[in-house]
Each structure stands twice: as C-alpha cells, then as structure tokens.
Image 1 (cartoon, rainbow, N blue to C red):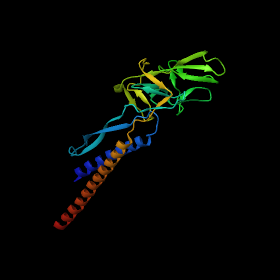
Image 2: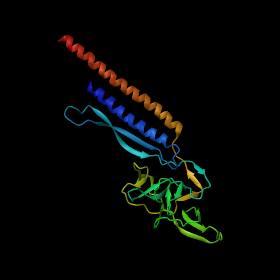
Image 3: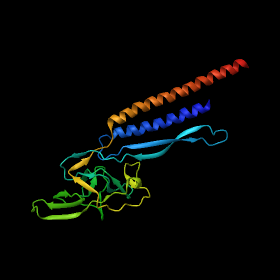
Image 4: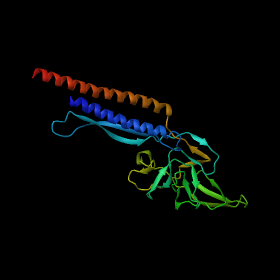
Length: 247
C-alpha cells in the first residue's frame, strides 16, 4: 500500500514543481531577452531498510531553452538585440560578472550604462559611462560612439565596446536571479563573432500556446495522482475493516 502512496506522492510533487516552472515562464512572456526555464526528472529509490521498492521522482536537469526570441525594432539608441548565440556581460548584484540577453539599456544619474534592472553593462575595461548631453550610437560589434549635442556630427568619440561573449551552450547555466554564468564561474572571454542589432530588442522565447497546453496537461496529471492517493486511502480503510471483522 505504501508503495502506491510513495509513487503518487512523488509524482504529485514533481508535477507541482513543473507547474511552478511553467507558470514562471508564462509570467515572463513579455520580458525582454527571457529564456524559458525547463526541468527534467528521474526516478530514484528511497534509501533505508525495507524501502528499496519505494521510489521518488527527483530533478536531474534544471536548465533553460537558449533558442533566440524574435527581434523587434524599437529605433531606440540604447536598445540592442544579440544576433544568434551569445550574451551581453553585466555586473550582477554580488559584483560578479554575469550574462544576459536583455539589451534594453538605460543611463543612471551618473551616466552609467545599465540594464532596466539596474545592472551595469560591462565593457572590456569595466562599466561604461556616457557623458551628459551626448547622442549615443552602438555598432554591430558593440562599440559605443557618441557625438556631443551641438557639435558637428563628424566629431565622433569612441567610448568603449560592450563585452559580448559566447561560452557555448554546454558551458552556460541560468541562475535563480535570471542571469547566466559559466559552469565553473570563470568570466568568459570576449568573442568578436558575437554581434548585435542596434535599435532593436529580443523578445521572450516563451511559446504561450505550448505553455498553456503544458499547464492543462500538468493539471490533469496532478488530479490523477491525487486520485491515486484517495484510492490508497480507501483501500487502507477497507483493509482495516476486514482485519477488524476477521478478528
């Protein structure tokens, strides 16, 4: 009897966790550069005397779908979209180097280039600062150029270059803060083959229709597992009655 309870309980827990991941993806349907999260499970025997036939479902792989989202034109000077594979280097809250596909930038009060979440965008020499009263232009390779307002358009100053990296899909993991990092935590080298499209942003790669279908299927699975637990409870009650009658 308890084997049925173990199987149903473990399945219900895994389904509940999958529902949470799918709900999180749907909530980020409109988040710039968001990559849909995914999780996979495997069965694992419960350890202990007399329990080798009891099995739990445990998470084996928590990752992200790195497929590119659609590129949307904004014609905004501080918007860039990464073309193909690659990431934009930013400074995480803990001061470490991390990576994102969110190329919708802003300037803080000191002129520091940052993401909409307030994370500094990194160049090869550190955070990038834009002087006041400047018109910004971002080239295909991430080079940032400015012209001072009121001066000739030919008077161009190059401030630096956004650090663009491509550690490879097998060497990148998504953290709980939504940022990506290399598996060993070592900062990735700049990759000259990574390019961006200026005046554009990359939309979320979440497929709303597919996610809604997954939510429906997961809800049905959860109901089935709850039904198994109810059946186990009913069987236990009937077995107790039989034992009481025979005694």
